[in-house]
Image (cartoon, rainbow, N blue to C red):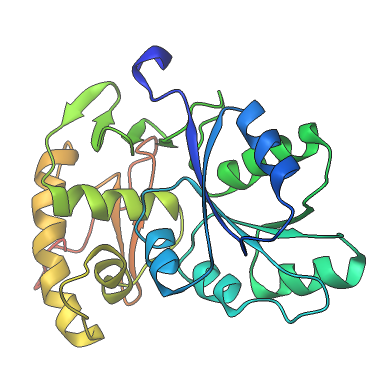
Length: 252
């Protein structure tokens, strides 16, 4: 995908009290081609943070107060997360990192450091490829374009439904990690909360549909791989997975 087809800015949601001194931090992000939306930390802004509309979320942690519970909440949702503090002392930084933040920065940090840390967090979460293009998740020869909601396999477009794309996007953000069906479905659906037993059969249907579109051979999957007894893993397709036993069982 040509870089000029991408949106020029990465998006940041900054959750901070209206009286917090974050002007220098915001200006640094603007200089690094980040578009910043500032909101007070409340239930409505937390829903925005969890909407998937922002590449990065920054939470302001006031001095002398406990780390906001929002840090742990958002970290549990695997959202790229940066803690912003008035002064990044060892004690304060350790508290933010222990709560789940990917990085901790003083609001007055040097502009270059702010942008570098923000980009490092995005790379860690797979929101940028090695060339620094925002919104691209690269897993082997699979390209997941988050902005365009498209998947390509070795340059060829893969026609996925919206639900199938959300599954592949979530698995791409956790590439190489074994994921359980209920974890994947609950992370990609707002309509229903799946119990582990229910999710098994529902996800098998998705697996069969996605493999028909994604794999060269549904019997020897190289991308959406079954890890028997545990769950599923998204791989890059360069090495062929071991074929599933054909006696008394299906691939999914």
